[in-house]
Image 1: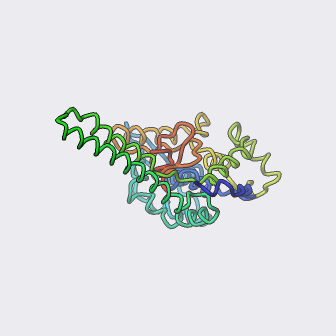
Image 2: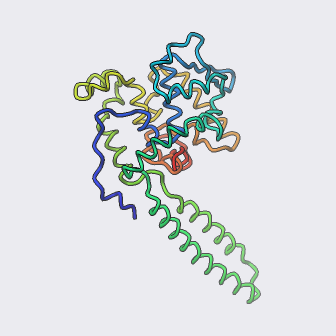
Image 3: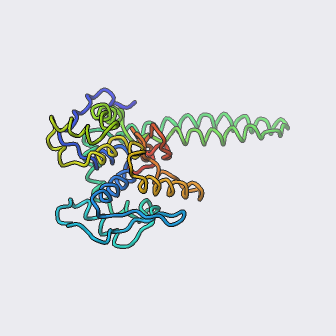
Length: 292
């Protein structure tokens, strides 16, 4: 059904943008995580913990902002007030501040057919609706027939109809990335596989053919391509703990944890991504990890 599957996979860019890749892989939430990580590495932000909560604040001695790209300057102004990690992913939090940049990334990604096309979404939903409608029609017929024949033990039929509705509601949700997008992410992860073992040394290796990478933080690029799981055990304890706490708090309160845990090698995302290693996005990340 996804016609992008037959299209050639885009070439690996000579100047990969960690932020664009993070957005493609996990949507706005993953983009926010990457930005916070990068600005923490550069000395603009610091993450502190108090009990079960973690906070992000500007560092006391701020480096020069003038050399920063617009997207980084934009979120620094949002952190003029101390923020809880959970605020980052709220509807009117940092995600909202990133909308103009997210839309720019999304437009470019859509032009390359890396997201599920709208016609595929429509067809998937229509087919799911038709199948459920057929099941509901048959179930309703049997329900009415049972009542007419004096058989009132119809709990199973009612549960079957409700269960069918739930199942087809889930199946009707389309994944965020197209088949072409999934293959592109897989291609990036394969091309930069060495980053997972030692980002610093791997950067020197890749820079021989991609000089532009000399100016890119190897850990940021690793995170952009593979997710936050690739940073585990590399000395970023405060960062890891902060987002782990946020994930647990969301889980305990019954909220979606997509905002804080879509950190693994997400290759697509319902609402954010379909994560392949430790992410709990509602469908990945993914899915709910932002995006369309």
